[in-house]
Length: 177
Ligand code: IMP
Ligand code: MG
Image (cartoon, rainbow, N blue to C red; front, side, top):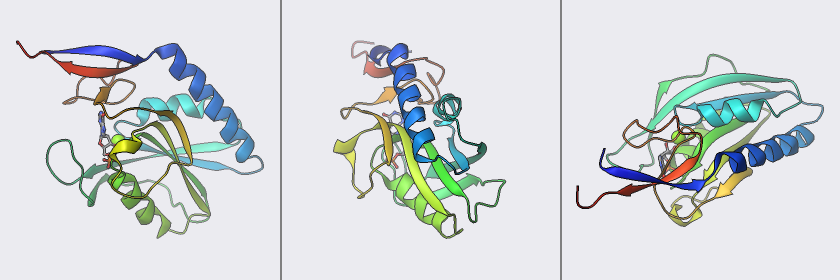
């Protein structure tokens, strides 16, 4: 491959921050039960790690969505590739997502889920790129705000590669290659 990966957030920092956010969620959801929705595929590493740090009763469900449109810019339309198995009516839904970039995917997904009448819907994201936002959406819980750079690792991919990196890295394209 003609690219190099520069470490942006080391593994230890990610672990520490997820534990902190998990503790905050455990406090905020005290006395309630959480239905964590993991957004496939990128959110899977984050959701699994975060779930381990949540102490209130929790169940997990998985949804796979894709944003219409080509390249790296998502559009406002979201296609459900795999829907939830559970009925979310009356449940406290917590979405675990890898990154909020333009915000298109999440804002559409949240609207779609609200139609199903959950008791509440909150968004928890590992990464947030506020500079890229085109839709007015803010995560209820965000682990790291990052600059406008294309990142991989901890679930995030570049052309389906690098999801398994235990850290977050920036893709640097090798110009000469
Ligand atoms: P949106 O632009 O907020 O709708 O984000 C759409 C999706 O683009 C995210 O869920 C990620 O899967 C992907 N994405 C956005 N930024 C990055 C990045 O820096 N690296 C890898 N995937 C990204
Ligand atoms: Mg995603």
